[in-house]
Length: 155
Image (cartoon, rainbow, N blue to C red; front, side, top):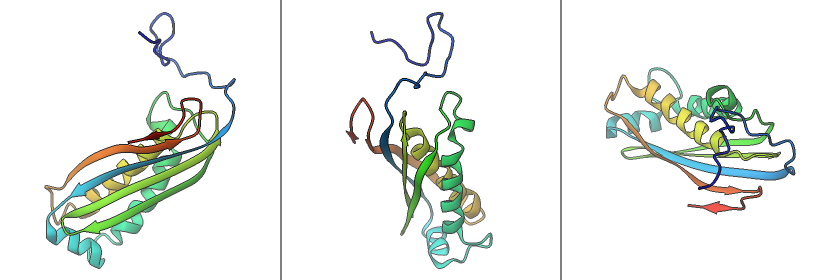
């Protein structure tokens, strides 16, 4: 069995020491989706949600979340992000979200991309719940990651 990197020899949680790793350009892309009633999707697409521009707020929320991932996920390193983008596509029964995050650093940005897409989708739920409380968030996953010692990953 391989050694668990986030546990020390006594089994206590620890933050991995990345000080000796080489800095490389790293990028991660994550996706997710929120399913909702057609009426809610139409209101979002038309900009007719009472709380405001759902897509604009969700984009900003996703960007902010990526930047604060280390405050939310206990063993994540704070990273100097060089790029965060959130793409949102309104469909007839929901919204698809894709987050792309990049850095030049010693550890990857997978968690930042996953946190960004999750928060963008949660924001859509928050702003649209008056129209449809049955919305469902799902399919959150890492699509790709590049850079680092472990190499590239494509789902």
